[in-house]
Image (cartoon, rainbow, N blue to C red; front, side, top):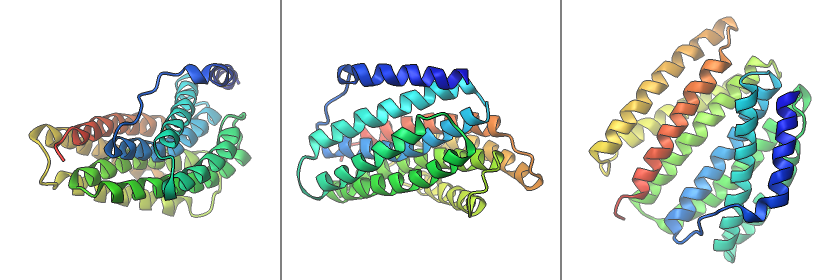
Length: 260
């Protein structure tokens, strides 16, 4: 598996030179909230890339995506640990760190169906822990701006969760409740997108960007409809959800730029 060998080389390089990775020091609770929200997304994105590599779908691109996502999660977790050094959130981050170590080990091993099912289960635990950190930070920020940053980042996470579940179904993993979990994620994405589009704080630029995501989301739905006949199109869903993620990342940055 050539793509997997590339991952191994890249991750060895990351381990050896990780201390030299350029990182922006966290300087505000808004920034910490934004970064914690991205950690949720990465927990799903890593598994999605793993599943695509296992099915030989976009193998080179997925290998790079897996490597970059692992590097980003590690870097951001270190930044959060440096900023949130005391109290409940520091304790929560210790739990994230412990779960991340086990998750990362499995995610960077050669993909197979048995481990894929285990990785999905572990991703739910890692997501729950990173969600806890994010929720506590949103309470600390306690502003409309903070809420919109959180929801827009959650949309990014959901785009990757949806792609992850879809890829798992296309690989016939046989994980319990997979289709129901997929449908629940789709429903939650619909709800979050609607909430953001109705937000009074939106600028004209933000609304235009959200309308673009709505169009991308509508296109993704056409791929979901093929599932009933077991006609999966993971390549298409991987590409459209990637576009949705990039669009939502820009929107999150726009919300971060609003006055508190």
